[in-house]
Length: 96
Image (cartoon, rainbow, N blue to C red; front, side):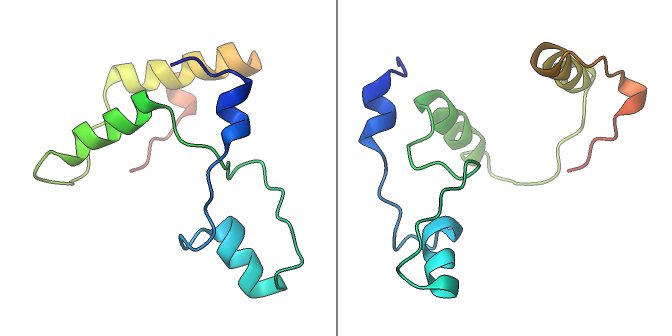
């Protein structure tokens, strides 16, 4: 899927879905407030994310998963790539 301007402009109507951004804000501040939070987006998750969550949810148990070496590597690589910060495995504590 290509994430072009139309994808982001289409939006996703979330009022009435128990969404903190819209429903929580309105219950606390009334209908005259427009929440402009960046962390809570109003467009759908990419299909790849939806498929990964559905595949995991199809497993018959939801116990804690073990943290493996590739998990640490992915986290360290992300911080280096995104923020230019060198993080080592020893700098990190993974929590479920």
